[in-house]
Length: 331
Image 1 (cartoon, rainbow, N blue to C red):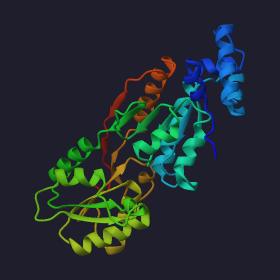
Image 2 (cartoon, rainbow, N blue to C red):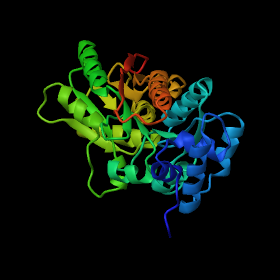
Image 3 (tube, rainbow, N blue to C red):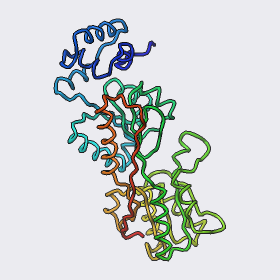
Image 4 (cartoon, rainbow, N blue to C red):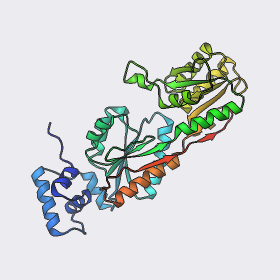
């Protein structure tokens, strides 16, 4: 199947910006007749046809559209982040289209959105090479990541600093041996488990012990519960646990209660994410809270800067967001 001709192909062939192509096809102002004629001629030669969605956006004077890739609609962190993004984007005049790779191929989801948007924002599992091909020249803002590849921009959460601060605070609270429950997510794509960055930070700042007390679990409440039981069985002297995310931490708290382990008297449990769901259980779940509002605001700041340059800026833009410790009952 021949590759679909995109607005980027027309812009490159005609030597104009994406916005100029949009103006030419929608008979808008701020464009000369000669430029409009050249764009339409190139479009005809390449067989380009603007999509109906883009025309509707123009009709409502909503010329800026962003594609939001959501990591997982089943994970409350991503749904809360998506809600914050939609609210903030609307205030700034951005039209948002969302997709997730959960229902099929992430590549297909990205390629579908590429027909309708000016840039992408989100959490991606595709490699840089795969994503570069899928976005068809459209700028990308990576969330919770760092990248300086041409056409890529990023907002990084300094989780290393957050985990370092948490480990020091737990030691000050009397914790003598820390354990960790890491995510088994990497096993979905490979038979070999790969430690998450969160685990690497944990190992960097863990108290000095003969061996790290670490187990792996599925990213769910049940997975966190099973992993906590395994951790306590293998390392009974652990009195503090860092859990990969808050969903798993809630499961760990529930498992501790079933085992008769007093929280936080015998074991302190600390999650990562800052989910509001952590306030709905007892004991409430302490967490390294990722500032979703700051993450979203930083991503949209980059989006606004790119729009101001008509998406021609070639410099990789980067922002860093600091997490904060949110002490609740479990730690």
